[in-house]
Each structure stands twice: as structure tokens, then as C-alpha cells.
Length: 236
Length: 295
Image (cartoon, rainbow over all chains, first blue to last red; front, side):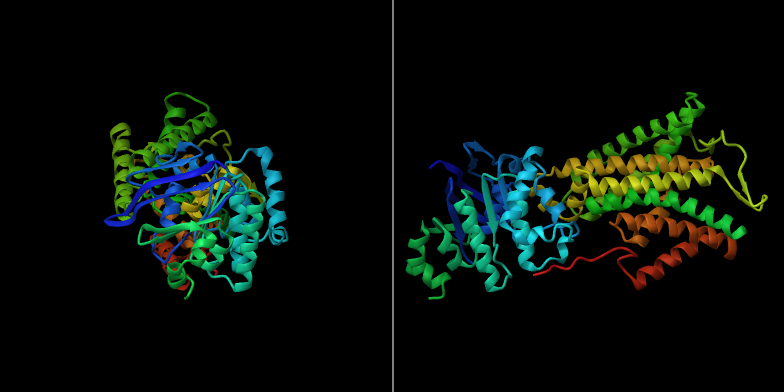
């Protein structure tokens, strides 16, 4: 099992605010790794730093054995990291199909038709709505579109930020089912969630982030049983 | 018949505004800044075309292409040197810079070409006589006709470009959410440069069309049409490409009708008055839309 992503001692600031205080972790090929923690702990900031929208002052981020800590965001995508941001951030004024085309912006032309088929296979709902303006989709459909869009570029690592946010419980189940399907298909996933219970149930390994630091780590199962995690994130 | 003549003149002037407004609205859409130097790029375009035909004896169409090339380079240069370093510093700094660039261009033109108006030779001078219809009751100038045709072509071209090409779609994506666009692998800086390039090339076309109908060319020639086209972009809904086209046409028609039927002194006041009323009733402009977040 090779290491896909290694994050070493990153420190990220928003102006004077020290948001990430020396976080290190890694993600191996084919794993689902989850970062859990309260609102504002630094989970999304970590993902933004990996995808290059924010910069770390120290440390290094290695992806497939080369450093990406200074690589511009648009080139990191081309290297194979696909990031589904918090709040989905689909292009609301574009059609479903155009959104997926944007997801394939860095893909080789000959891969696009194949990937489109794969995405429609994973999300049949999107196939029925190809010409619909994305802003008119329901919340669950928008989440599916955001995930489908991220799969269009043959990612070697898929980063999902709060995929369950704002969705009805039945849709949350559906989204996690899809995450597991992607996992079975061999996709490496870094998952950020506030819904710790769901996240730990699918994760191979997990890290708990509190105020910019990793305070606990272990397998998904271990952490789901740990007293600290149960008290803080699983409601007893 | 006077009515028809006025309508055609209005549509023609409006077409020029629409082409300029496209530049404003695209740049606003993609970088959320008001490029107040855009009007002066029109003036530069007209001067370059003027120099091409008058000093270099180039054929009219070659001088137009030359103007487009120079303006494209100028637009990219302005963006790269003046606006890009300020990206992320807040809109006020960029706005002031844009006004500064506007004055810079006007004064550079003053140094190079002097303050005396140049008489711009219409690029359609080969078509000497006007088109006469209904036994001479309706006359249309070739300039008006070609301007309309040019505007229709530009609009069709832009609609195709933004709707069906990869780069055009990337532009829409950056306009909507520049962070998410980066996560797609889109290079935002390149896309913004491209937008300035296209907007400036269109400005060159607008400059040539404008001066073909209104031939007095001065360093301040671009300022007023620039403001009117900005008004048109806001009128139609800034950030919206169809809005810029509609707004431009309407502003042109209102201006000519105001001049013909109400008062030639008040025509500008009427234009801006209509703008104020529209913005009071519909603050997002005619075709501007607010996207609400869906959960």
C-alpha cells in the first residue's frame, strides 16, 4: 500500500489567526481517511491548504512523492487531487452537463466520454437532468453533481468536505453509500465531516482535529469506540 | 418615416454601446471590478485605425485589425501591470487605479496625437451614397447599417463563444465562483487576461464604428461613450452578457429618441434618468439575477 498524500507539520494563518498549528497525517492508496472535529477546528482549512487555495508557512505537503506545497491550485488538480468544497460550490448558472465539463477541464479529451459515463453510472439522477440549470437542482442532487464533477478528472485522491451538510437523513445515507461505492471502486478518499458517526463508520483511519491540532488518531473503528470521541462527537 | 430613421440610428448607436458594454460586463463578471479605463481603450482603437488609414495608407479593414491587435495587447498589459498586483486588496484600490489608467491613456493620447480633433475617415467611405428607401423618404447611412450588422455578428460570436467553447465556459465558471474554478484546474489569471483581451478587441471595433458615424476624434472621445456603455451594462444587469446587449441597444434608442422628440440638450439626462428609475424598480438591472443558495 503506497502513500498517496503526506502532510508534514503545516501551519496556516488567516491574517493574525493561527488556524492550523502543525498538523501532520497521511493517506494511503485506496483508503478512506476522515478528519473529524467541531465547527472551526481547521478541517476545511486543511483541505484548502492541500488543494493550494491556502498556503502553509512551514512544513511540506507531498502528493505521489513530489512536493505540492508551492504548486498553484490549478496545477494541483492536474496532478490528480480533486476537491469537493464545503457548500458544494457548483456553478449554479451552468447546466449539469456544463458543470461536469468544467470538472473535466484538465482531463485528456479521450477520457472525457468514459468518465462522463462513469459519473452517470454512479449518479443516474444526473443523467436525467443533463440540460437542467444546476442552481435549480435539489440540495442532494447538487451534492451529487459536485461529487460527479470532481470525478471527471480521474482523481488519484478525492477530497470531500462535509458532503452530508444540510441534507435530509435519507440523502445522507445515500451520499455515504456512494462514498462506499467509490471506495470499493478503488478511489482514495480524504473525507472531512461533522457527522462523526457516519464518517467513522466508513473510514479506514481517522484523525480528530481540535483547534488546529490533531489530538487523536486511529482506525475508524477504534475512534468510534474511544471514550473521548464518543463524549465529544457522538453524543455520549 | 422620420420615426423609422430615428429608430435605425438609435439601434445603430445602441449597437456600439452594446459592444462596449460587453467589455465592461465581462470584466466585471470575472474580476468584480469596474474597468473605467475601458472607454479610453475605445479611443486608442480609433486613433490606431486612424493612423493606419491616414499615415500608413493601409486599407480600412487592415487598419481595423491593427487596432484590434494593439487594443488586445493594451488590455492585457493594463490588466497585468495595473490590476493584477492589486487582486485581493479590495475593490476601492482597483477602482481608483482604473480611473488612474483612464487619465493616463487620455493624457498619453494627448501627448502623441495632440488636442486638436482628428477627422476620422469612415471605414465605409467606399459606400458613398446613403441607402434610400420608399422613394427617398427613408434614408439609412451605410455606417448605421454596417454597425448593426457588426453588432449582430459580435453578439452571435460572443453567445457561441461563452456557450460552446471550453475557454468561454471556463470564463463563466470563473465569473461565478473563482475558487471553485481553480479547483477544476482552471488558471484564473490566464482566464482573466483572456477576458481583458476579448473586451479590448471589441472596444477597438466599437471605436472604429463610433468614429465612422461621429468622426471627431479626440483624446476624450472614449470617455462619454464609455460612461454610457457602463450605464448600459448596469441597466441590463452587470455581469450578464445578454443584459449588456439589451442595455446597450435600449440606451442607444432612448438617447436618439430623447434627442429627436424631447430635447437634444436633455438627451443624456434622459438616458441617466431612465437608468435611475430602472435601478429603483429593479436594482439588479433588467436581466441581472441573484442566485440564492439552496440547501
